[in-house]
Length: 337
Image (tube, rainbow, N blue to C red; front, side, top):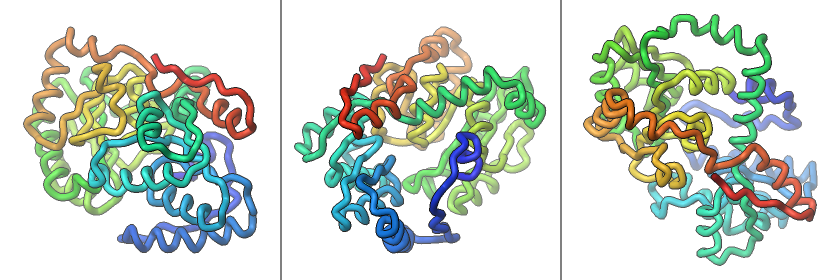
């Protein structure tokens, strides 16, 4: 999945750690990462290590850099739910990274305030999120380059333009088991509507894939497809009427595109769009999911009110601000909208 993103943005990796193993535990991944990234740090001798987000990879790389007394910069700093188990293990990962980072690049004023309350040693900058930089660049290319757009329209010509598209993603560990079964029950019920089609790029983790395919395979207007390349996924977000997700990144991307989002989690570390009304927390209750989707589909006024295009998470210039901060230049911080 990473290779196509690298190609899209004309990037080339200098090191491939080749880490992924089927059914790998978090501790196994963490141990492997520490060993392999340490070898890279020894070879490259960097002045600064930038880590992005709150994954196990980010946490392990931050710890490896800390052990080598290398300065750390955290992109996407300050996100908090206040619950160490939600999401798991991301809440712990980001708290640890922020504790040891010298530069804290907070995407919003809310995340900046979270950091200030914790009295951390790092210097805080409000930059917006680089995910919006990437999204803005990709949307621009799709609108300007017919050679990118046409193959997508041909590849997904099976989409019924007379039905509203519900785009679904899900992968959170805390939803394994009953959570995903409830989500599938909701999607099965929604599939009975003759005015919708559901597109679900199914995560490859067996805890997700097996349940989803068992519960939803064979339904005429439910398309269970393989995980999408980034370009394809952006295109699908543009086509969607409603997006149902547990992804943090999608919560940021969809409001920028003017798409209503139902977040299938109990809490979120991205409250800005919830406060603005474009994102709604629905958890994994099948009744709540069905009720909220039907309300948006059946009430045009309500739907239009949550489709206001906004960019609380960035303006496409986060990367420039980060570079300016690292170089010691003046930073014009992101103010949101």
